[in-house]
Length: 478
Ligand code: 4AD
Ligand code: MG
Image (cartoon, rainbow, N blue to C red):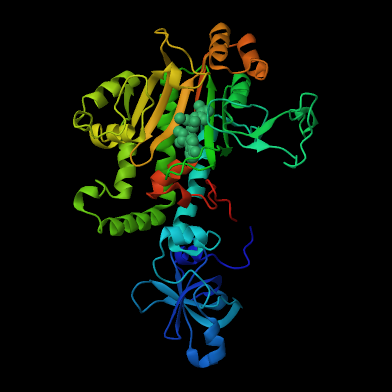
């Protein structure tokens, strides 16, 4: 790109003083009719512009307020004030767009996150959301970089799917019908043959099944796309629309799948620790300031960057589901009746259990594998015990389950039997079953919830604050 102006990031990195600069940005603060601090989003750092008030009339100076877009030309000089190394001595200043201070909601003070969610179109102007969204962008880049370096093919699986249920949550229907005018068949039921696709269609809950077909041809593939689940869960870790990364690998067993998951997440975390060092330093300080208000036992054990480094430096603990249940049964909270759900073999691990294992017992990321077959999806490979499947979940501090994956059932008869038992239509998934008919082989994969990873890396408590426009029950503004 040939820039018509310079990003603040490049100006601050250049270290060349007494050179002309041309910058654009939005005003953060304006003090003493002289000091304009601007930011252009290229970096968390602001740039101070110094103007000579006598050169401008009062009406013009009034236009310079927080949120206004401005253009400035001048000379980059060493700053005499503290707080910044360099500043711009302005020779020409234009206000491109004013921001009426009476109504502009983003003022130079701390706003609470609920308030900012209602102003989701303007919250990227805050230092906090700038830092989060730059970090999110780098994480996405790191994902593609990791898979590219490791020989994976990027596959775009469909967003509109004919699959009706895969066991990954409630689906959103896709149709062109008007609800008050639905064509009916002879029996008075909706005649889906007359709908746009000639059948029932939904938004995808996962690209896995289609990714498997490509893995069984190209070997190593991954998807990275939006995913939709109509679960009515108003938690800090669920969205109705989120992004998921799903690698799928032929000739890989569950141990290899766990190795891949661990290597992958360490790689992308390591990447952003370097690429977004300034953003993370700021986010860490924010968390420390927030926590000062909490009692000591509610504060986190480690500052943000130390926590990220800890993940990089330590091998994830790997335990079977059965071992996990034993640990939970013998734990203090179980004995004192402190868990809301009493740990029992066969139950799904609840958030409180996951957090106990990760944050109290092991104090480390944990991979739990070999879950009971009855609580997991139909496609997971049945173990010899006939009771458990080759599933694995990666559990992280704060966010809980960040990855869910498995070795897939590659045996035709076992798969068909399982589908029958779980009421999954063989007729609908004929193409998926075909993979087990033609050149079947063991293969594995997993799904990483992208927003949960962004939450972990930025230390944000609520998943609604790590995606530009969160979608959740009763909320689809913007
Ligand atoms: O465990 P899940 O449901 O696994 C699958 O969908 C598999 N098909 C993945 C695979 O093997 N290819 O979802 C995977 C991850 C979860 O661990 C979680 O991080 C995230 O997706 N996730 C959500 N993130 C935000 N909001 C939601 N409603 C989520 N549901 C799952
Ligand atoms: Mg899961």
